[in-house]
Length: 295
Image 1 (cartoon, rainbow, N blue to C red):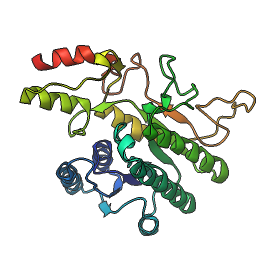
Image 2 (image 1 turned 180 degrees about the vertical axis):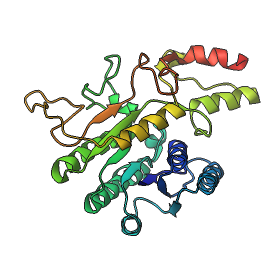
Image 3 (image 1 turned 90 degrees about the vertical axis):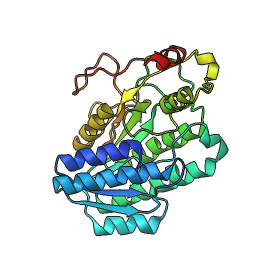
């Protein structure tokens, strides 16, 4: 298969692209390599992707461009015929969306519109895209489920990702474009983002500096190891979304549709992953901070 992986210089996209190359798929990466965090880390990831392609012999091409550039996206889809599109590019970061909301409109709304349009006209068999657990917003019902309503986001970042889910459903309904959205919970592992808590805490501990903890550490967080995320992304991409024949407009289930659109969420801690690990259960932040110095 030939797979477009957007955001392949990013943490998750980097690992997904390498896994696809290792199984023999042709991969086209698309990334603007912006400076939201150190571009040197992104360049190092790109070099490893190229090394993986050379070692495996799997075809690989890279487009260095902004997905908000409609002409660049159209040129990419004209040059390649994609069997799958895995859209992982986005402007991430909850707090940054308070400071620079326009970046989120460009990267998460305009860019996603360009991807949807390109997939529609190219008749791509399946679009899989990244959403976020942040869409659960004000919902306090636990455990979170894709069957719950998610109409009360608490940050602009979450609102843009929820918009992606709604936009994807509209395209699935109007143009029969199969789409699958994945709501990631905090992902950690090798080559991770330096703006994430794991790296921020570690850096401050090594430097002997105070750790910034919100809400006095009295909140919990689910963490997901990168290998499990990659496994889930690729399995979701391989399994083309289909309409749910039992979906009822009288009792609409947010998780499915009569259009080819299942909205997915990370599984609970009770589900064993292919790697043999279990999904990391919720961890209280204050407890995590206390054990890190001795780890």
